[in-house]
Length: 204
Image (spheres, rainbow, N blue to C red):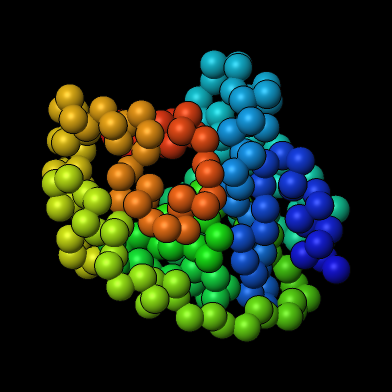
């Protein structure tokens, strides 16, 4: 019941329950997030970190209502181990690119916060990675500079250098080609403007 209550609470704010384990519930941006966020005051006030502030405004009161502790990826250092938590839910896996893939968001993952509970939740059963059935690995082939050709070594400098070139404008405007190439990402329908926002933040 608590998972349904959380989902109902965050849904109107463009978020959904991305997964949970025995102690934590991860909340992330869904395909309607950009519409909800751009209607919020944080988007318009000109202050720093608008998405982080919006996420906290939504999730912190929810945590108080469900008697949980709210933790956010932006809190730190030290930073909470969100990747470990995500993998532990059984709904995230490491993709061939090295980036995490989610069962419904694909590579379009944006975890906005976690709710930490004292009482144990019933863990979800583990599922096989969708990448196991995706033998062509279009996510790897899509990168125009092979920055993701080795899942253990993401070549960040090469990626960022490409983004500063005219051909790199495609990734800057529409989002990382590798993320877009994932078949699951293509069904998630994240707004291009949201992807562009994240790419601008990534490039710095």
